[in-house]
Length: 212
Length: 214
Image (cartoon, rainbow over all chains, first blue to last red; front, side, top):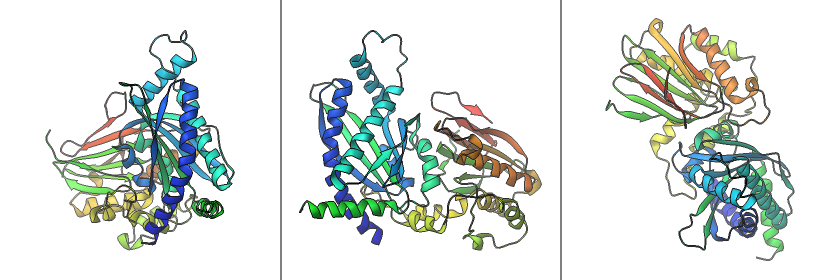
């Protein structure tokens, strides 16, 4: 199938690009959480939108999800997702690093996740800019904690019948310390129809320029 | 109850006789419509994605006049932002296994038939299927669930996909004179729906919430 060949090439370029972003992402997360992370090489999945949940697991897996729109050279939507149990761990870490005194009661603030999503999305968009000179901005993040299929529902409905592909970048952050949990972060980029070509063309161009 | 449980995914619709349990998980802006004829124990469930199919590429499925012409008239005035539903077919029927080694099987292809993607075509198709399986239209009652707005991004509920889905489904059911006897729509949370065909019960569950029967 033509689409499969397309996506293979697409994946290849994305891997190149994401390798740049991944290191920065781990660095950024270390800065926020004041915690030493080891970066495992990110995985990339290119899927049609209605299959997106399969990377994360069951359609009813609960996740904390930050949604942003991409504007600029490539338009579309962007999601940053962390499974709910791991998100709780991230929030605990964040609270420890921000202020010990604020830790009263159990109510963990989900807005921490919004901030982390915001920063990591920015990091990846910067990597895209560095690699293929595309200016993509993201809009103000909005947050939801619910089932993965439910949060993606609206996008599948709105873009699913239009979008050719969506890109999922799975970032796994592991700690060097024994007994510490790993964090899986999912970054989902869904370019609007037509824009995946913009993304791919400039990636192809960039690769040619760098002589690889 | 150890009734057989059937998962209904996005854009799918099924009609069966009891005993069976239809289950749909992860409803966000999508809406589930259940139709039930209690006298004959025939029930159907459709997992609908969008309010209307503007270009109506699926006419061959219900080429008969009557219901859909009225439905068509009613929904004609509504504008939809999906410019070309026929693209859906190429996308959805393309193998969605890239990168996961998860081959889409033939059954999946069949279930992604776009009739059940859109409220207007789905309700008519579901009704016809109900009648085919022996249900009598005056005895059919409907329950709807879903149509949430997951993100507080400033968009008005009435303009969101969920809100428009619910609105158009209610309109269509009104045209078909099918009473809505249970409803759980709106809000900002996802839902799981279980439809028990032997009793006609529809149970809606949410994350961190109580199960609710509608």
